[in-house]
Image (tube, rainbow, N blue to C red; front, side):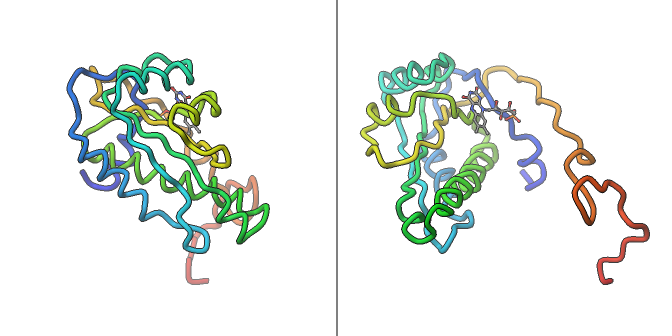
Length: 184
Ligand SMILES: Cc1cc2nc3c(=O)[nH]c(=O)nc-3n(C[C@H](O)[C@H](O)[C@H](O)COP(=O)(O)O)c2cc1C
């Protein structure tokens, strides 16, 4: 798939077929995360790949979202924020969340490119997930991703229009100066 198609076809999938994905494809998608930008070259996101059905069921319960349990694999993402807070103080917390998002998007696009499907799940009980996966308390839970093949074909959601998010020269200024000459 070309880059634009991958970006525009990505969607959250909450219905998974019985077909089991090749775990190697999921590892490759996780590998894509490493190429995201990082504050001060500190990569802070970590992943746990889960295949045990009982553990996936427990995570679905901790998230109160039953569709998660239907996936053959689940990837949990969490950050070790201490490295960035040591370097950048309070701002390090913000950087950590921002770079987690950038790395996660690489992962999501790579999942899409490999014909797999997932959904970013951010609503869950952090403490329960940490306990299930033995993640130390000081870590920041980011998200969990049930991974599988899509069952059927859900419609893509309409996206916000460009003219609602893009301004020129100042906040809320919608009109671009015409002619627009990037060299002046
Ligand atoms: C931070 C974050 C948290 C989310 N948490 C959940 C969640 O707990 N459960 C869920 O089903 N979807 C969750 N989503 C997925 C959104 O519902 C979805 O991205 C949104 O509806 C747009 O649809 P799309 O991903 O198909 O473009 C989350 C997405 C983000 C970015």
